Amino acid sequence: MKFIDELKGEHRAIEACFAEFGATDIFAEQKAVVQKLVDVALSHLKKEDEVLYPALANAQALEIKRLGDAFASVMKEYSARFVELTGQLLASESAFDPTLVTQFLLVRDRIKNRIVLEEGMLYPAYEIITGMERAKQL
Image (cartoon, rainbow, N blue to C red):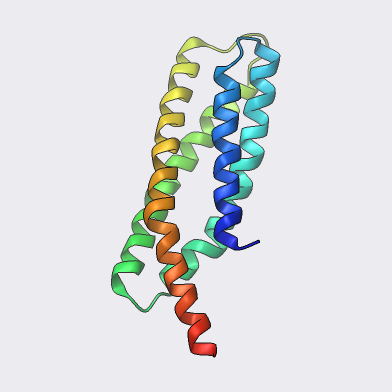
């Protein structure tokens, strides 16, 4: 499976977790969904940090480098907030604090928007530079 297809598949899994979270009011089920979301998202972020962003940072085209840098910078903020917030949710013993749920839904919306931007801008840029690298090898 191509790397970008793998990342897009993880996006679908992340979106499915958000949908599952919203589809139940049962605390134990919501908490299990948050844990599943954390597992998928952290694995996804690691792949982006180790493969995607370095490839973009090494691109010959300055526009692609800048795009990658901008996305990486914003993602650091998003991921820090995501880890903090999901950690608080997972530490909950009985019911989620409504304020935390509201904050989680805001983070969810940011992530959903981010997915659209990554798939529309960042991933095509990665495919351009990796396609150019493959063409040079021929």
